[in-house]
Length: 129
Picture: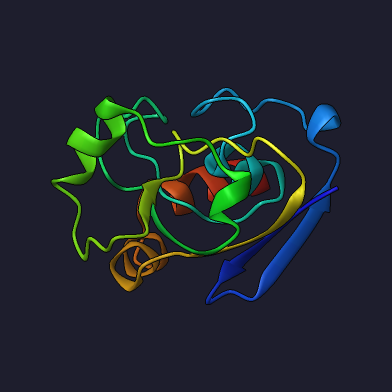
């Protein structure tokens, strides 16, 4: 089983990697895909196509369970706010093996969603608001 904790929300989800349905945003089994499957607000203005940095995450634990960063992601991350040595794009970071993963959604991204960003509008549409 894979276990992912999203900070600072404190939301932890566990799932079988082989049974996670693909939500058509980002790469299958990506951290963005996991977030969408479990209703965790993670902005992704470009639809998960590695064309922006709004799904920027910081990997706090479990990097060994994740795919290696490809050049396209590395180039795109150069434009991310609050870049760290552990920054990744949620849409490109694939969970490759079971284990415990902890990621943090940067404050600027959380603020964008809470102030009516794309993810909050998508959630409103789903709820019928």
